[in-house]
Amino acid sequence: MEIIGGGLLEIRINRSDVGKRVSVRALTEAGTVGGKFTDTVGVLTSWNDGVLLVTRRDGSPVRIPESLLVAGKVVPAAPARRRGPAASFEELARVAARSWQPVESGTLGGWELRFADGFTRRANSVLALGDPGMPLDEALPRVRQWYAERGLHADIQTATGAEGTQELLCAALEEHGWAPHTPAQVWTGALAPVGDLDADASRVHLARSCDEEWLSRYQRFGQGSPAVLKVLHNGPSVWFASVPAEGGGAPAAIGRCVVDGRWAGFMAVEVDPAYRRQGLATAVMTALARQALDEGASAAWLQVESGNTAALAMYERMGFAPHHHYHFHRAPDPA
Image 1: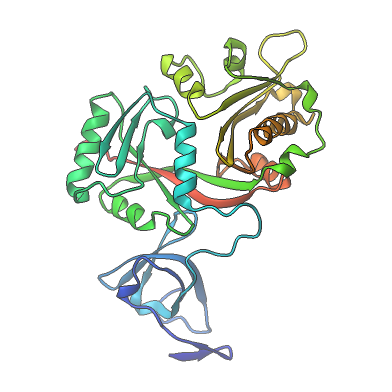
Image 2: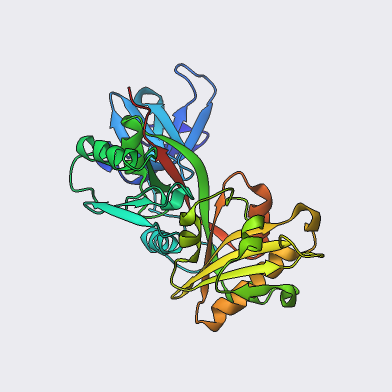
């Protein structure tokens, strides 16, 4: 224990706190004079060989030598939410999974192995919400084999940053050489404010299926395979939005929404660069939100890549807020 800057610093964590959310302060380097510290908040995922591993909300790991630790305490499992609907990580993960359903799936204990001929990682990765029913040393080779038989590299979808997320699994996967990639976030918000936005939703056409013109605007389609249409059309209640372009052809803007109980999920919101800054993305979101409200939904969610700053800013203006981060851990290349 020591007094720094008039405050009392205590180390009130130990190895038994692995798996809990902690706040720790450490010296930046051994022998530092003058109170140079770094603070880290996250889940204590391991404490081995004199090193603490803390996983931050965004999934980034921080390794802290025990010898540099000057303070530490357990903190609440998740910060209080500022706004938006209350939801557990598992509820949102299952809702999102129903919006991107695979064309083939298998099980390994409580894990679901999903395959859709490579279209979208969300339908071509392991949904690891339960226990695989065996040690990772046995489970991971089986996962790799299942995907190799289908011509894919194995990915496991994981999440960090909320109560009940998978920091311990992330750390274990990385110890086995599975590297995280494609960081993204799940945001949530109340649905009614999106439906009440001041947008010209009358320009938006809604349909139960997507046609070739809609697909021609969808950036992830590419050449695709029959699996693309199966994944896009499958879900509890699926709607496609489009704003016609002048002269026909590919729409000026598109979107997809899946209504599932109280939830409405927004995805594939894209605007032709020639039509940007005209409020079309907002119009698409508003039209889809009104349809979802008519079906009894009250809460909204969406997934967005962490580096898409323009989309993040737009969704924040609409009243959305981050709920948790998610990632994909990829199997190492064969030796």
